[in-house]
Length: 157
Image (cartoon, rainbow, N blue to C red; front, side, top):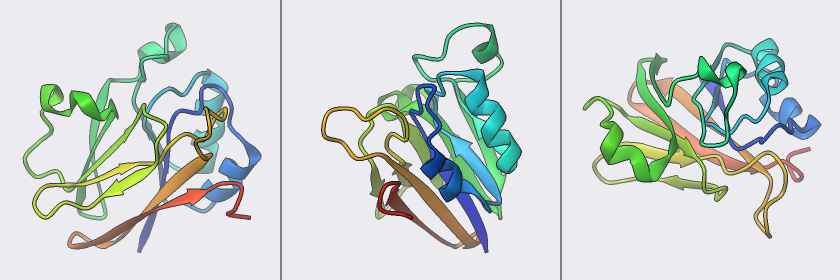
């Protein structure tokens, strides 16, 4: 079983609760708006790490991050982008089973009848409006058995 930590919209704030939640993951995926290079450094120390650039990720440190990434973990094809509204323009490979996104700060797991599982881990950075501070995990047993759940970082401890 693989445990993939999902995080987004840290906007430069990597909370201790997020670090604790992500500790022990087999891989971490950040869906953009990292905010600062130190967030990248801290996450990369916890586990192998994949990230995409969000609309607020600017400057030299962010230039090396692509706008989308496709990776295969545990036999599962995963497509990562920041804003789900750009999915049709970005055209993920046909065999993608999971789409990870951020941007809206609204955590959600969308299980479709046909098409990929869509996971937005919400925002783990500064609180926005009354939205919760969240991250998520993707559990992969094999290429056909996977699940995702959202975790409120202040209730996870």
